[in-house]
Length: 156
Length: 291
Image (cartoon, rainbow over all chains, first blue to last red; front, top):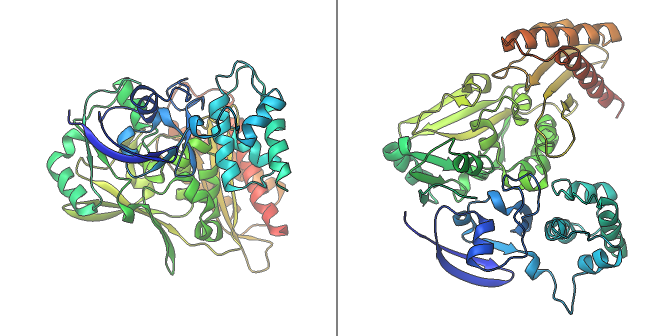
């Protein structure tokens, strides 16, 4: 199996590397780039734990073939904020108690970030729709939406 | 995810891609969004020596508006269909079909070509294409051929495509802006579920707007390959849309569609549920008259 040369931008940094053809974007992030913030859940594109943003759009990284990100820009939870300077969505998640076990949190945040960057005036329905592909088995959806609303409303 | 070994092949030119498939099509699988292919490769359901990328071929992703039709590239994503201004204006039933697929993540990645090419009886864009009299351009190094969308499917998960062929384009009719449309669906929940059944409806009213001039009805997820139910369409045509006529047409859709399935294990609920779904779709379409 031939390796594939890819170049892409990850969290604002340009990278060039040779990767195996048969890995998912999720495995590229976790096993080859050491970015463990993106979680591995169902691996069939149903739970949303692995959500990252590619060229401004939320996708399930577990079912993206890694070589296909050649030439693209990828944002993961590691690029969202820092410990000293949280993204407004992260700050709101903390303030509203939107994190319970935390496994769905990076995916939830990346789905909401894609919406936020695209439309910071989003409606309640649009926020609900944005996280409709993200499962939270602690069922903390109410707090998650409350957190999102507090950020989106500030923009209005 | 553990994927079997394969070589990844990616061209920016359609010609080179077709050349490659003419030589190695038997051992290749094309990839667009990959939302189905990766899962099938990982499960060992499909095998490939080469995985051939289509997403870098710009001409395959376009949505172009012409005088009488709209041509859709096979790698246009469901999100692109949902928000396409030309489709919203002239073929809104397809926007509705695309908008209910999976989740935002799946719609951002999955493509119309993949939805058609996988030939799942539950594919949500297909009933919409059926009521838009769509045609599919099949291309290969040998040339091109146009087929009506209904003839593209052989059986569940099987199409007429040979190993060297690709879906080159999907053409849909441009409908008058006052066409009444609806797309309805039954699933266990709204997001992230596969349709148990669905129905796409286009209604064209006469000039006064009180009689149905032409009706198009295509159920989804109940028949092995897509069908229009012309017997039900005829019940509506030339009539005022009374409660009785709508119920009669809906019962006909349900009867005919379930007959088509040719299966013993159809659950009891399907027949009345499909009838109810068609009633809901026709009424939803008719409610567009008041807007």
